[in-house]
Image (cartoon, rainbow, N blue to C red; front, side):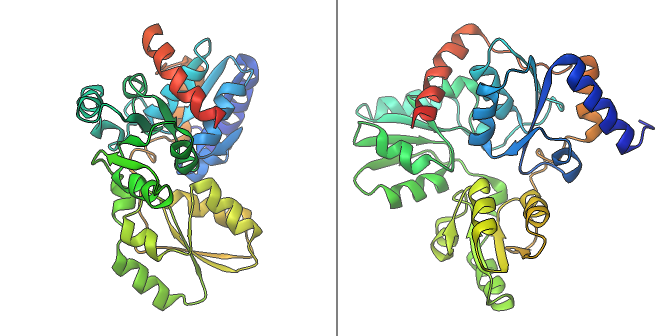
Length: 304
């Protein structure tokens, strides 16, 4: 595409108004995508925006499970995923059949699914959660036993904070956060002794245990903005660091170890957003049955 970025931005703004569209952007997206967002945030914030928006079209700049979540919460709206192939390896590590096998193994347990799952998995789930509210969601369920899918690291964080319940984790993980190690923490602490270490709960338990704060991406943004500290080590996907720097120009942010990149989150380019709006392409479609079953799990999460 020969159009420069300002022309593309202008085209997107014009089409948004013409077609009553809203652009939702995850914190890990490229800076050029974050620059055109109507709303940017983590999966919980974007799920709420998807449910609340009056727009007729939702363009979801993220990965497929997020766009599916928007469709479940707003079935009457057209939801577009600008890059059709943008998936999530962790979400693909759990299937409905695996969940049903775990339910058979632990019949007294309720199923809590991380929002990083497919719509089909949400449809066999009692309640969903995000990294921001996983502890509160598990505390809120009536059962003393919980099947937690798919992320074993987030499950470990929940178990640590909800000792009164027994957590049965699936063995999925995020390859981005799994890449941070204890050695990275020791090295970063040595290089930046005055920095506050913020890590995502999808990190390995030994990394989480060494952190000053364990937070979702939006939690990191809020913490950095309100803190009187000037230096921060960030243990999450590198896309968040751009936004942290934009919102806190007087503060310094370092990646925990080599910058970690989610290849799927980085697939979307600004041209893809324009083409999605122009052609209304890569619409997310789900069956009415899946939407109905999955919606209950998401609404119970939003109530918490």
